[in-house]
Length: 225
Image (cartoon, rainbow, N blue to C red; front, side, top):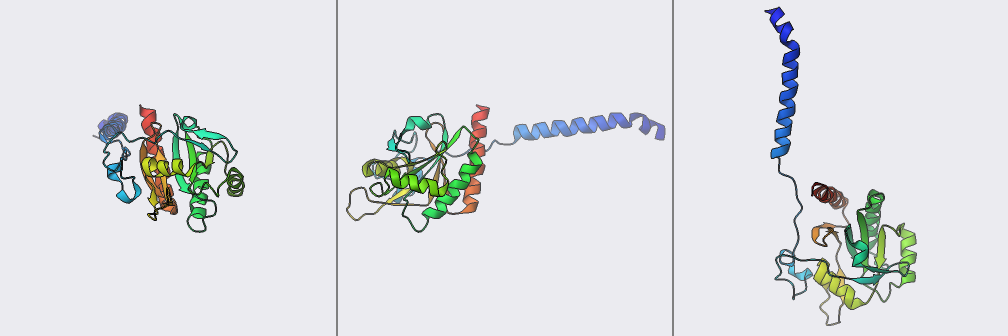
């Protein structure tokens, strides 16, 4: 009996290894692939969405844009064509949540520094104050790398419409002033088709970790396609 087991010991080990491989392959094949949602206006808190688009349930895209960055360069949607990017809204003189948001965005910048697929985009909600010179000063203070991260200013109307009709992350002040807005702490994950794939609290480390994890999921989806 011992001779029998000794003779077939190697075969048994091979069969066990093959069985483990087959079970693993079946598990991976049957395991659902995690996918990120595609956000449309009807899914978002109405306070953050312009009334003209609150009814939209599909096909929402970030609109074309043309703004000016910290170097005085015109930045448009074409600079982000074929890229995944993370967007937010801020202002350089904000004393409360903006410094935390900017620090966390700088941490994201470190993570994506060598990733050619991913960029960052921060919009000023006080473009009258945030001139090119002011944005450049802020960029230098916060460690902004020009090739990865644009801080942009422009007409208040254009930024307001982007905030309320495209990214859906800014409150209307409601005081009757045209295009006045209160920015939120949200970071927005945008895919290569200009669709919103996630919202994250830019003041919380755990939310930044979730954003980076979702970024990997989004990139993996493109790798599979």
